[in-house]
Image (cartoon, rainbow, N blue to C red; front, side, top):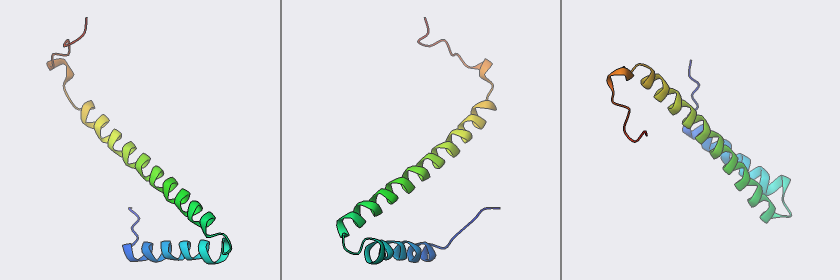
Length: 79
C-alpha cells in the first residue's frame, strides 16, 4: 500500500519547519538558520534522488532479465 500525503500538508509542514528554525531555534542567528535549512533540503533531495535511482535500476534489471540475450550480437567492440 502506497503512502500519500497531500501537497498542501507538505507545504504547511515545510513552512512550520522553516518558521521554527528562524524564530525559535536560531532566532539570534538567521544566517545559521539559513545554512541549516539549506543542509536539510540538500539531504532530503539527495535521499529522494537515491531512492528514485534505485527504483529505476530495479526496473531495468527486471526488463533486462526478461530479454533473450542469446539472440543478440554482443560481440561488438570486444577483442
